[in-house]
Amino acid sequence: MRAPWSLADARQREDVEVGTGPWAPGWAVRLLLAVVAATALAVAWSGPGPQPPASMPILLGVLVLALACAPGLGLSGLVVLVVGARVLLGGPPPLGSTMLLVLLAHLVVWLGAVAARTRARTRVELAVLAAGAREGLAPQVGAQALAVVAAVVAEGGVPPGDGWRIAALALAAVVVVLALPRPTVLWWRRD
Image (tube, rainbow, N blue to C red; front, side):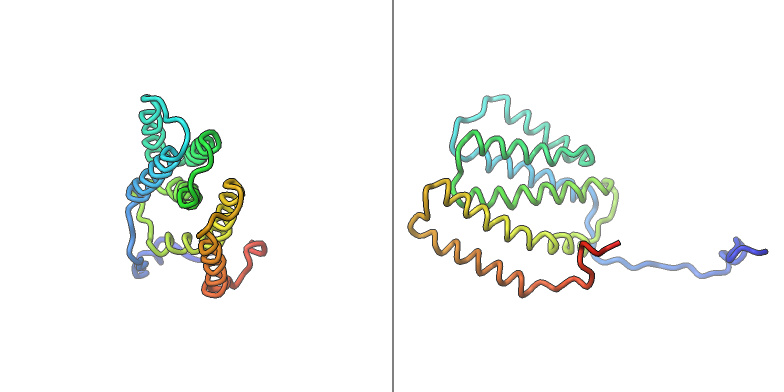
């Protein structure tokens, strides 16, 4: 019995070329991860509380460099832990910084997962990155709303002028729900 294909058949077949869209090199994804992680750490340390000792920026720089060079080690979680510890020990940052930290923490974790699955010479399609960013948009809106509530509670109520921020976040949540395409297969029913 003959196999469904053989080397002789394979030589006669024409080559197949798979077209790809615009792409970014894997090293650029890792560089972006390092920039986002460094930004998150800088925003966390720009808030209230005691300033770090002189050796802390060097240690954080080593952490960011290790994250960029070896994203598969799970150091993105350590970056988020360091940011969270700084916010916890330093006191609540202003609302804008809190919202930015929530966004940056999500980006660090997501980019860390993407970078962990790629090598430096891998070509990552921009469509793949865009699809991943769209999937993270709905949870981000919910997380931002929770950040606003946490900041309001930490400050002791709704400060004058911040009601428009809460209304804007509620409106953004409605827009996301209405504008994002619905998945054909729900995530809990995927094989």
